[in-house]
Length: 517
Image (cartoon, rainbow, N blue to C red; front, top):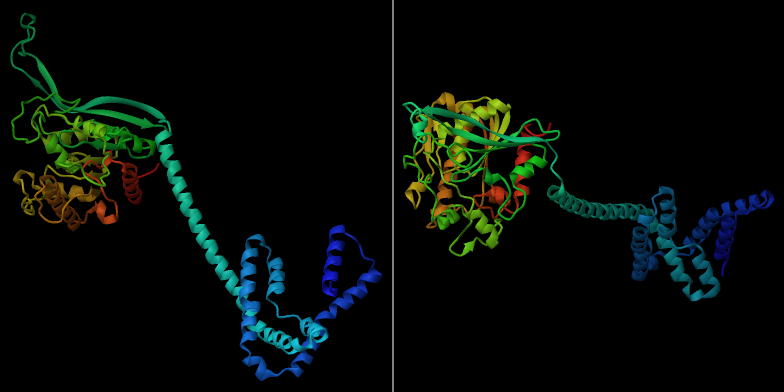
């Protein structure tokens, strides 16, 4: 025990017990305590008078001791204590306790107890006092800097964990959240009526004479959520497909229908004229559409054409759900046409839907792309077009500016173009357009027919985007691998990362002021 320790113990007891020291005792003690600093300065001054300065500054051990005493140890202690001390006054007291020079009592004790240690202790007290002029502000700065870095890193980790956790929560919510609908239903839109010449008679009950055929319409299934966003989304399927494209994925997860419905978009899914639930055609198939017949014995053709895989199965690292059940569900999604493919008939029915429901967003897939390009010719209510891998039918260009068909291994598969009047083409420049293409599209001609086809389609799509923008339009093309999203086939909306792709699309809609209420 020494006077300093005794004084600390007594002070702690008085503080904890709340003992009130009589003023007649407290005031003299306070006056004596106030003399501590001046007396210590006097002692240090007397020590300096005895100092061998050359020996002090040349003693490497004293410098090393000063470095540890005045810099390293204070930083370690302060960093340990920083999370527990928020009050700046308390932290200042802590800094003063751990980063101050060696006490003046050290040389005194050495002189009394071990005179041989007097010179070393004197050098330590002197050098640490001089070093303190620089070290104390330095320790304070370094402690705050290191603490700030550690806190920022901790915040980054926390934020990353929060983002990941939020993603899991949102993903779980997207899967588990019940759909709250204001209403849902279906109807036919567009189409024509053709009368068969003659007179109907019950004597010839099954004869067509004098009867009408109601066909060439589109079928629409719609769902409107509670508190919907301002603009609905209309979903146009691709070739040999139906509205099923947008429904549940081949492995049973939410498709774009439910994903966007849960984002509070009203959704309108169509079966285009002469297919699916709109299968009644007023004319017979003319055989000019490669894909219009019943798609029998074409599992490998569609599998490879859609870049799902090749002879070895689903591509490695593909986003397509690689299970036998999912592949079979994919193969069972194909649907025949009941009549010739007429893109203008399809676009006119689609335009009538837009006129019925008001301003909306159009999302197309594959061969539905050219239907989307034509729809603004017949309505002003298409506010934007999002085209997922448009191709298989012509891209549109102004007359006189039509590029030649892209060459491919299988000639009929090359990306094609068609001319329209400049007046109609400029209608495409009045709305924002987004085209998205997936993975497994080669940069150079390929012997694999499916990927090579989509190489040509992507090349033609880039020319289309340039043509739109050259006429002051607002078209954008995203090739997913170029933004770090890999493994997607032709059926982007059906794959394991379809939530991510839906969010990518919604971000684009937000950028163009088309999302939200």
